Image 1 (cartoon, helix red, strand yellow):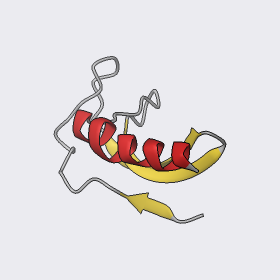
Image 2: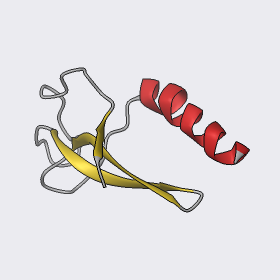
Image 3: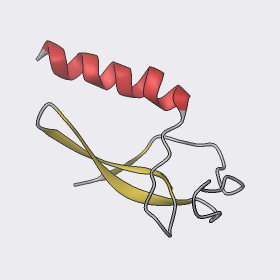
Image 4: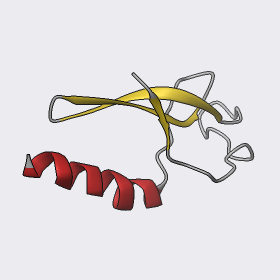
Length: 71
């Protein structure tokens, strides 16, 4: 499975509020309606918290959800 790179902004200055660790990009599996996608997202290396920016959730992810629901 190919890992999608959907974010182009630099999140290296963002930190996990729980661990105070800088976020790093890592492949994360997202599942929706039995479809699985590997997406590179900012993740806390200590606790594994995945950060999904609001713009991604409201734009790209909403678009993909709509396409999958129409199938």
